[in-house]
Image (cartoon, rainbow, N blue to C red; front, side, top):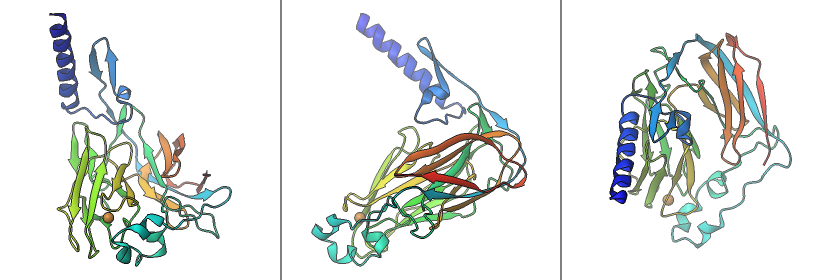
Length: 293
Ligand SMILES: [Cu+2]
């Protein structure tokens, strides 16, 4: 009997968790659910979020600079032993060499870093109609040879309106431009995007996808070519940017006058900056962020 009661207790607790996560509360911190769902005895309590009210009139800009000896991209040797070698090696240098670090030799600017802000833990960003509209309707991830392009992708497919996540209209298109077959597999939080895997036919594409925001990037891979990888950051707000080839970034229309968490992430380092900042109206002083291997 004891075992039965224990199991029943587990079911009850699990039921509470499912109910609480499905009733319109926003669970934001995927890595640590205790941020939002606090354990009290054997039950869980969801902490409701309130809007962060602030004018969206700030501009953040800056650069990510590498400190130390610049990492060099190495040839991907696994391509040489693969049956698709002939096509894979037709790729550009950036497609046939390791892709974690792309650092500009002259300026030491670091590409593919993602810069973003988060609201305080008990808040969500209150977005105007304009801020709910993504800059692009379709974002693509392509496979012309044997690498994903881009290697790091940022998306804004959904926002939180205080009750639930709503679609912004932005969708992801996965395209295989190559005459060989690829596969796309992405792995995220089981409660959010879960795991998806599908072959992509030569010169084919997959149906458009609407991804769900997560607090960590999705890991993308190809099951046919073990070296292929990419990262997809999925945000519920438009306050993010990816550094360009020289390490520059700019984020427009950010909330001002309120403290937010300013975060910088790079694939080779994870979150390498995480600090509280309050931005002001108009152009804020450029921010220089340093990263090392
Ligand atoms: Cu592939």
